[in-house]
Image (cartoon, one colour):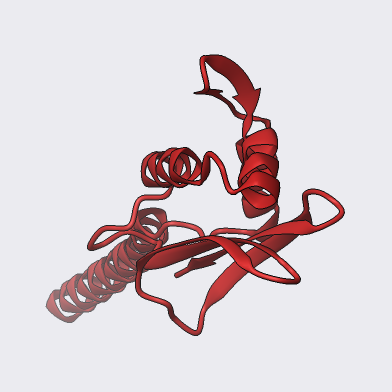
Length: 155
């Protein structure tokens, strides 16, 4: 009878050890999944080309004040291109919009940007900030018969 009681105790101990191992394995698996979930949540998604395209569409439809009138940025670009007037205002307004729209700081997903407005004959506006990297998204758009706006965002 004494031997039978010892076998029951051993069997009970083995079941407890097995149960403990299962609990530890489940806890480790949960911690691994939790670690992956928190790591991915902290990362920012990359900028997509359609976001840059939408931004450029918004910029050219943006209204600004020039010569006591409210005009679209696209008209100010034409004014700068054809008559060489309003270029300073255009540059200042674009720099202000870019500064507020694209965060180029330490730890940001954006390392830099470049916005160029040009014709086949000359460069009208060239605004750069931050660092140019090998990883970037961009978009170009025809504004008039002559001018093109192009933007690249570096990550």
